[in-house]
Image (cartoon, rainbow, N blue to C red):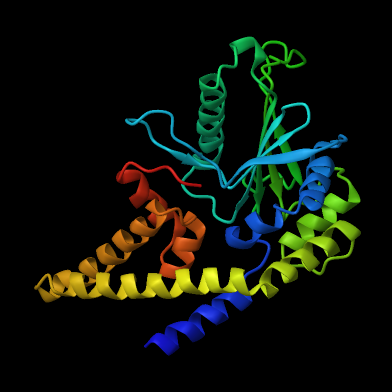
Length: 289
């Protein structure tokens, strides 16, 4: 069984791409590529970026829900960026509301560190989506708060939410960004940025330490998953076995998520729908990306 899991883990590792959080997070730790991507998305120059935390967790109070941010970055001006890869839509309105929750938690985290309201930093929450969330075929959707009566009047609260659409065909964007989105969509990298991203993915996947980390996680999960199935099947009635197996799987996935495993990775390894696992986690008081 151990050898079978090892083969499955290696196959899963070989199939990972830029779309998988495990890989995307590590590619974004390449400062040059991360800065380059941010500059293309925002169409601005950024002198320098740094990483306060890798996969930052914000937990303000003992009785509050924690939020895990995949890639949390600051630049030389103090602007905060959170970048995430999104491969599923979830329930209607889930992703837009998640940006609202992230924004509140980031602001509270900054205020907790002694920042005054009028000194709250510019923040960008950026979701790179493998699908068109809004169905308008735009490559990029940028949202800021505006006055309903006077749409040209912007609130100026410093908060921006951006959704990139890897399937989009409309809207003028930088050629590098357009080709990066095609790369995310599974097409061959053409531009320099996309090609360097592709090379970084391969560099990460050549690292024995990264492969061992992923495979160890995968095989340990399979052990826990099997134990969960056996526990569920011991519940007795034949008609309850399928329900028991599913419950065991979800509880096992939840334990890994509480240990810091990203939701996408846990769902992929457990072979359960990501939205089902997310709903189960939320029912148990957790909010994960």
